[in-house]
Image 1: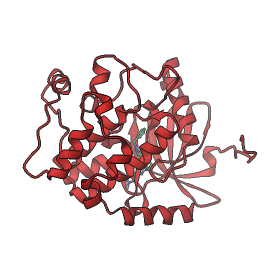
Image 2: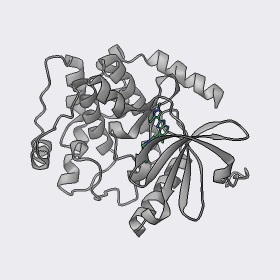
Image 3: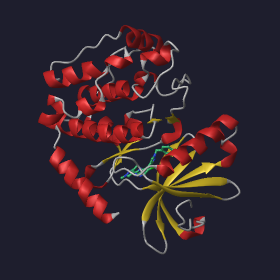
Image 4: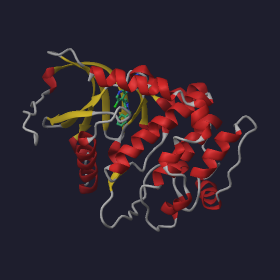
Length: 286
Ligand SMILES: Cc1nn(C)cc1-c1nc2c(-c3cnn(Cc4ccccc4)c3)c(Cl)cnc2[nH]1
C-alpha cells in the first residue's frame, strides 16, 4: 500500500465462515474468523453479477475507497478487500452489538440518556467525515451498528459522497423519512444534509417513529416540505429544542455539530466521560 506496508492478499480460505449476520441489497454478511490470528471480522460478500451497472460499480468503488481511508472509533473499519471469480469480499470490523434499528424495533423508544449518547458519538463521527470533505448522506438506524462497550459504529458507505468543487450534489438517495427538503427541491446539498438526518434520527430514537412518518410517500414529502414538527408529551424540552434546531428547512439555520455536543440535552443526558473512556479502551486494544 501507499505507506509501504505489504497489503496481504487474502483469500476466502484464510477464514472460517460462521453465522450469517445480515443481508444487504448486493449480498450477505458473515461473521468469520481469520485462521492464523483468530481475529473475528464481518465478511461482506458481494455477487459480482449483481453489480450490473457502471453506476453500481462506481458506488462500490466509492464505498471501498472512502471507508478504507477512515479510522475513527465511531466509524466501522474496512480492513481490506479481495475477490474471486464470482464475488467481491469486504473485510469489515465486527460489531458484537448488532444493528441499532433492531434494538429500536425491540425497545420501541430509547431512554434519552442512551439516545443522547448515540447523538454525541454520531457528532464525533460526522465531524471526522466532514473534516475529510465526506458527506454520509444516509444517516439512519439501518446504517448504525453497536460495537464493543456499546460504542456506536456508523456503517454502509454505499451512499456517501466526496464533496467535489461543485459542492452541490443532486443525486436522490436514502429513505424518504430521512430525506432533507433540499433533496426535494433539487437545489443540491452539502454536508449540512447530515445535520437534518441527525435531527430526524434523534427524533426517531426518543419518539419511536420518524417526524414525518405518514401513510403515503406523498404525505411524507408534503410534511418534509411544510416542516410540521410535533412532539409527544414524553419528549423533554431540551430534546425538543435540539431536534427543532437540526430539522430546519434552511440548511444554514441548522445547529453546527460543535454546538450540538454542547447543547443542554447532550450535557445533561449523554455520559460523555464514560464514552470517552471507552474510546481510550479501544485505542489501546487496536
Ligand atoms: C446482526 C448482528 N447480530 N449481532 C449480535 C451482531 C450482528 C452484526 N451484524 C454486523 C454487520 C452487518 C450485518 N448485516 N449488515 C447489514 C448489511 C448487510 C449487507 C449489506 C449492507 C448492510 C451489517 C456488520 Cl457489517 C458488522 N458487524 C456486525 N455485527
